[in-house]
Amino acid sequence: MAKDINLSSRTRNPLLLLLCFTTLMLLRTEAVWLTIPSKGTKCMSEEIQTHVVVLADYYVVADDVKGHQLQTISAKVTSPYGNTLHQNENVTHGQFAFTTTETGNYVACFWVDTKRQEGAGETTISLEWKTGIAAKDWDSVARKEKIEGVELELRKLEGAVEAIRDNLIYLKNREAEMREVSETTNAKVAWFSIFSLGVCILVSVLQLWYLKRFFRKKKLI
Image (cartoon, rainbow, N blue to C red; front, side):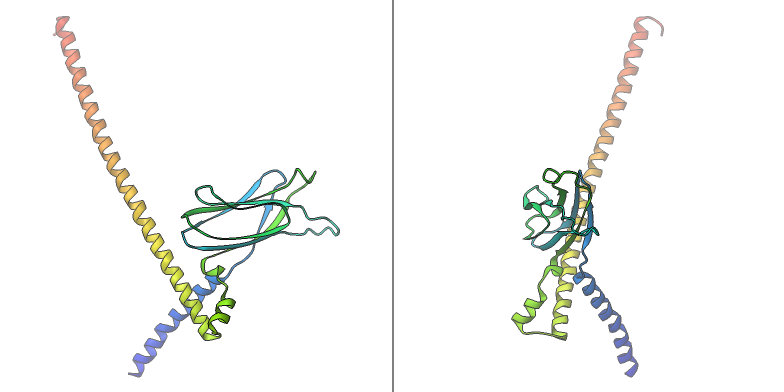
């Protein structure tokens, strides 16, 4: 009996460690530094499904030159169908938040305002992009529901598991769609091959009939 208990505890510990690691990876967010050229646009995209909260904060990183004025940038965020979700011009920092209504790639583009700044060079910005469970304000949840410590961590684990489940369902649905498209394409290719083979056979038969008829008229056969 003791061996069974030890075995079950050994099997549970890796699962708990895996869940904790997954939660930390989901909740962990790091700012991405993007270098924007003086002439051009730098974009970042992420594939997101519907009903997902997105939060982002961006700002121009100051250079090492003291007294140098920060260059201003423009930002634009678009949905998969081209709808503008956020647009800001001539700023050094900004933020945006929205809940997705379309499934696909959401694109955030940044560029330097060269019209207002002559001789502007490359600009570095810091972008912190949070989606899903990482964008949830757990401090507000803890204050509202009066939970803390282990209970709060368990709530985070629950949210992480739900996020993983939703992601797996999304991937499963995408796989089913891709498989259906692949099967439809294979069927069309097969029918096209059969049609092409039939056309080739028909053309060959007509060529033989024509040549045979031609040679008979010329009395060569």
